[in-house]
Image (tube, rainbow, N blue to C red; front, side, top):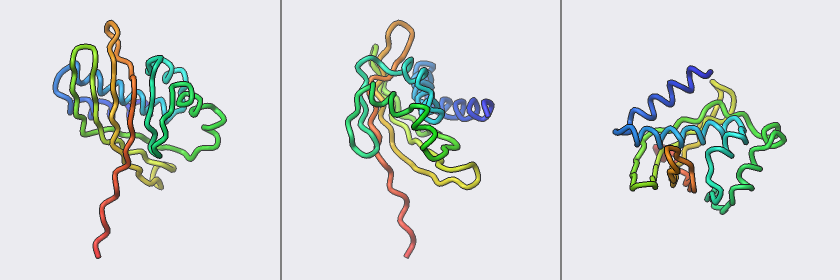
Length: 149
């Protein structure tokens, strides 16, 4: 499974032009991976102290609430997520700040029998030294294509 994640990360990051752009896209992929695996320690490392999120349902959640959402108890009650793939990166870097917009496809359910939930994710990252951390994210659902009539 780790080889698959590395391949997905390589595909997503190669679409960004410069090493700096690839680095910030990689951090956004790490966030998606931490959410998929309910890895609170990774979330703690990736998110700034003042992190804030606009959730897919429009709630504004502070860092502690977001990390708390990914508890072991929550994982046991949540549907299986077989993969989270990000692509179509748009990156803007200005000094110690970066804005990354990606399409995120979350496959909910077991592999081979999952359904895709597609969102546009906007992430604001801040660099401290050589490390990029995520200061905020905003999740916006993408409507599925209209069915032919």
